[in-house]
Length: 157
Length: 354
View 1 (cartoon, chains in turn blue, green):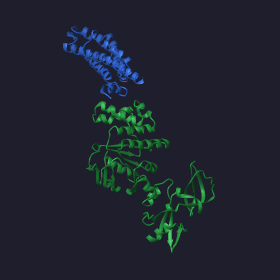
View 2 (cartoon, chains in turn purple, cyan):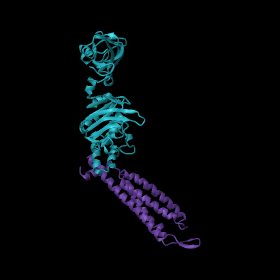
View 3 (cartoon, one colour):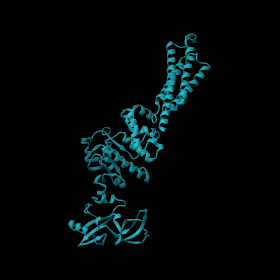
């Protein structure tokens, strides 16, 4: 058997760990992001939106883990969900980091910056990497599951 | 493939219990050797010493002429199949079979080819995506064998691999192991306490008792020419009937009953000139005739043969007759035996004379 053929045939028995690991990595970067946001010690974030943020983070982790498990078994439809989660992460860039960047809040009677430049850049990087992992993993999963389906169909023939 | 030489091997545990005494055998390349004996006779210990799982207390182990006595197990290029399969429950069958090669950092494409080839040989291609708990005992044992095959080892070791299977599955898996040996041609050492497995699988059998090798030979040699009383009583199903024999003043008493003995037995007695012997007759060498009386106390019909238990010379014995025999308890059946197949042993040394 040539290598290309073996590569295809291997997919029948080996888990699709690439997209699965990317989904986990996306969750890890999301965690880094919300740890960074929640540790900022001022009252800028402490309103109703923080509740929504917590819920979104929980849902992101839940769906992220779920996708990780499913794409491992070549369930290509979960690739779409991963892409959707990636888009959510991109949208989130324009919620906290962008609104907080350059904003000023009062702490102990003093005006202070909500986010330092370093914190702003870090939060953007975390969300972008998380989004990229999800989108790339989703595309990879869709491609791999399609390839496997075609291979199985050819074997049946 | 490899040849093995076990030279004066002893196994003495830390508490000074000796499990194996002076074990010697030269195993040829591609040979199928079976170690057989009752529980505790040292057969598994010997196998584990070959595998490198037990230290060799004394003696030498040569594999392909190379001294491997102190070589670690991982460097011996030997694969072992255990009675309890030892499969990883959380891995699929494919992953179980590929695992050792993955640890050896083998190329993933090579691993796939080897796993698929082994699965094809063992008929496991349809179950490669399943977990071990979704397979039958026979399939699990085949996976354990597959895991050994993919490594392409010099020697296969089997430690009572069929003991956990039911009788039917044991028969079919036994045949598969025999076919596997024919196909691979690899040197195999197989441990069992089941003499049927030993007789059907082996090129040569090593019969052991209490840590000592009793006899090494082909299945037919052990069956037809047992070296001593232990081998005679261990090999054969049902076991050989054994009767005490006394020679006094040219008269012969079997279990105290004066009996006429075959000419070749009489000649052997005269040559050895002892007083006490043991005479052995295999159940299948007893036939319906006119010489002796068998008092029937149990009749077991199995279809193609009948096992008749009863008293022969006043001693509990068993005869194996062809076809369906309708004896009742209390019947007195007249029997004879094949004179050429009577075995004679020295009662003192237990060694075979005839």
